[in-house]
Image 1 (cartoon, helix red, strand yellow):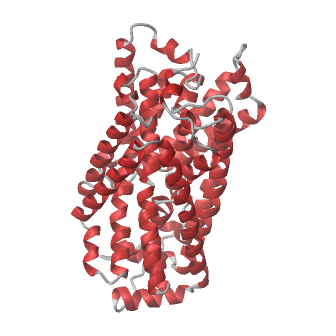
Image 2 (cartoon, helix red, strand yellow):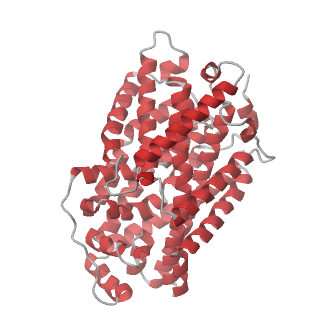
Image 3 (cartoon, helix red, strand yellow):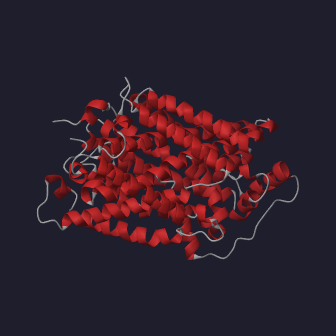
Length: 487
């Protein structure tokens, strides 16, 4: 007997849409903004940023392997939440995924915020000096709100339109990456420094001395960049809307990871080839910090018309990152509702078979997080990265727990082979090494500390689950364990 989820959601997406969705969520603020701005937090990494981006992709191999293996047997809108709650425990699975959900939803606010900087850079390059307004407080909020609610309308119209949208934008991503790589590798650092001095600062070029390299700073940068690869965590959320998911989902996940690591490393290398870290740090610390982005840097070294074109494309790319973010956030809420943890009304779908209530709530929350980022400056990039690492570790624990069971279900045999055990142990080790490097930020207020954000999110998730458990008229844990959401 099929569950209500299969009847509610449209199973129409293939492996290309799955890959495009993951890459679209990844290739946005992570490479165009965070990769460069990481030097504000970890300046001692310097020109090793491209290496850090490449290593980040490599340490995600255990995650990629576990994801593609799990997706061969269990696919739903719950993605890794369904895997964790069935392999470890319903409560732990929910709390971990709830923390992840907070991170990905709040990240939408941050992404919407960054649109203002790239749009300001584009308009200034076009000769519209007043365009710098979009890099102000109100400019960030206005353009961010417009972007969020435009994406809301896209999702409301159905997942088929979403699939077509991300496939088209995947082509735009490739075009943008190729242009950035070409101009980044064919332009000398001396040329960039000269153009920066003459066109932006009209005099001495700002430059900072890079502090001595530290392993802690490098690990912190790698952990921060896990945010950039966050789209891989969102791909399984399309399991409930993918045709032939057991075949297409594993393919989509692997293709997305390969594409991301190639694009991210290549673009990062090209950018730091043309703009050395000491100059980037100087830009970040200046009043022209909006130039410390990929379009800001490339726009200075290309012909004016090309720079304008690149800036516009990257602004669109950043804005489109909101689309997969809204998808994974709303589908997570849908899965929580399916498991009777969130209110049942959240799994309502409209005539386009889109979870409209969950999408609406996501848009509202993203708007609030945008205002929070703009006014207070609270971001959850580090929490987002930590939550991804926790998911990897808990999935690994789930694999080991299944392996130790004497009697296994058919799907449990598939996800507890030798290769999965190796991936599980590797994932746990990676999380244990990386999380401590960013769990505490010196000199930052308590409410900005990743530790505090993690603690508050975990307590909130725990209380929600306890309330749901008491409200259910039977054994909620047994109900969740007894079913695979895809069946």
